Length: 122
Image: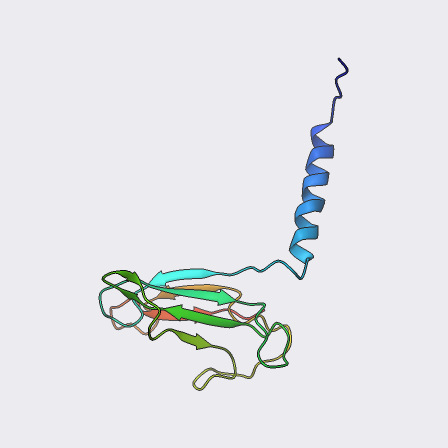
């Protein structure tokens, strides 16, 4: 039986190349997500960033989908879909903005509730 010895550095280099190649592949979708009670009903809601979302003809402008929770878990009703061309969102959608690339929830307005959402743009 023949055995082959592979240097750990070679394995790491191949693994790093594979990871980088997959990160650069346009077919792979990434998202950021955060849970908080955004609507104050006592149930966790889920905000999901979709930075690769096309808005109309604008490639990778990005978006955020907020899915509201209920006593039975996440609910399909009343979900919200936001992007930079949505009313109340600053700036405008542009190619490769990747709105929703990072998300954070907290009490940003100091009202005592962790119900605010910060959205990152690349």
